[in-house]
View 1 (cartoon, rainbow, N blue to C red):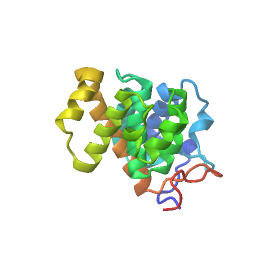
View 2 (view 1 turned 120 degrees about the horizontal axis):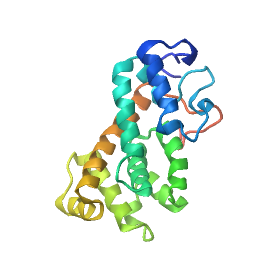
View 3 (view 1 turned 180 degrees about the vertical axis):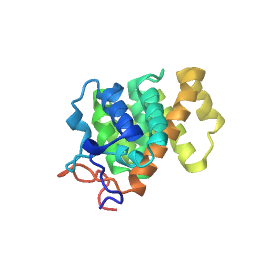
View 4 (view 1 turned 90 degrees about the vertical axis):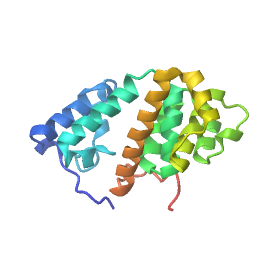
Amino acid sequence: MERLTSLPVTGLKGDAKRLFEEIVGGDRGKTRPREDFLNEQGGLRGPFNPLLYSPQIGLVSQKLGEMIRFHSSLADDVREVAILTVAARWKADYEWWAHEKIGRKAGLKDETLTAIKNETLAEASDAAPELIAVNQMIIQLLDRHKVDPETFNKVKSQLGETGIVELVVLFGYYTLVSATLNTFEVALPSGVESPFGDG
């Protein structure tokens, strides 16, 4: 059960209303109807309902997410491997559910998605080297809070200096998203089962 009441978007005012409009009217909403963003109670789905409780901070957070997802130099498949690696380690159901679909559109194969979820991408013989390197860098940040020189240099050589900086920002943003989803026990849409099981 979700730990925060779902705030109906029809009653939003001020910065909360502005936050809603920026989410559904910005880059996230360009190819999606507004209904895609709403839950059964008429509130925002996913990590966005909690942001409405602190809309000024929510505006900044939402903008960072929009910039890193839609305006970075990272290739779509690289971006989604990084996001899904964070989601898998956090067992953030909603994040995995949302980005597994996006990852498929970005060209990630079922075998790659399964390997990310099972944390075995480094052993996957058919995974692209840059995807393995990004996956390993994110895992090192999650586990050790540092990146070893070999992994850093691999990722830097593949993504460049701008790309590796953006990857670290993306890591931070999606760690925030996963923490938000898990802390407030944000529910999956009705009828969708946890990609990680019950526990």
